[in-house]
Image (cartoon, rainbow, N blue to C red; front, side, top):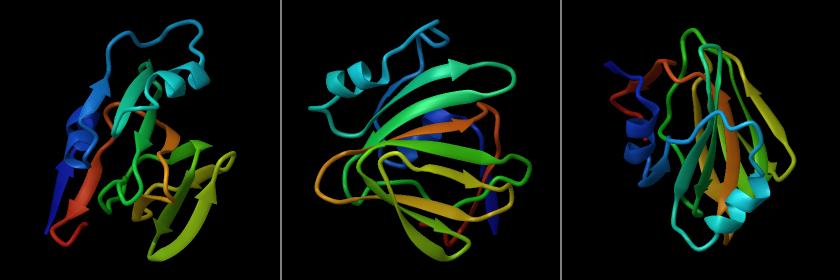
Amino acid sequence: MEHIEVEVEAILKKDGVLDNNFDDVNQQVVNAYELIKQNANKTSWSRRLVDTESNSATMIGQMPGEGNRRHYHPAWNEWWFILAGKWEFEIDGKAREIVTGDVVFIEKGKIHKITALGDEMAIRLAVSRNDVEHIYTTSSS
C-alpha cells in the first residue's frame, strides 16, 4: 500500500525537522555558510532558499541518526549538494556513505532513504521542486 505526500514543510516535520523556515525565499544572494553558523546550536532545521515554478532548493540540517523516510518520486529527478558532515544514502536498497562536497543525483523512480552519520550535524542542500510527489509505502521507515 502506498500513499502520496507533496507539501515539503509537512514532510520535513514528519521526518523530525521541526524548525522550518519557508519564508523569505528567492533572495538575490544568500550566504550558505552564514546560515549554517546561525543554525549551529539548533537541533534539526531547514531553510527554503529558492522556490520558483521550475525548481526549489532547501538547506536541511539534521543530527546523527536522523534523515528521511524511504520513498521515491515517480516523475522527478532529485539531487543534493552536501555542505557539511556525512550521510548514508540508501538508493534502491544499496547504501553508500556520502561526505562534504559530494553531489548526489537520484533518478526518478529510485527508492531512497537518507540518514545523517557521525557525531555532529550533517547539512545538505536539496534541489527539487515544491510540488514533487513523494511516494511512501506502508513499510517505509
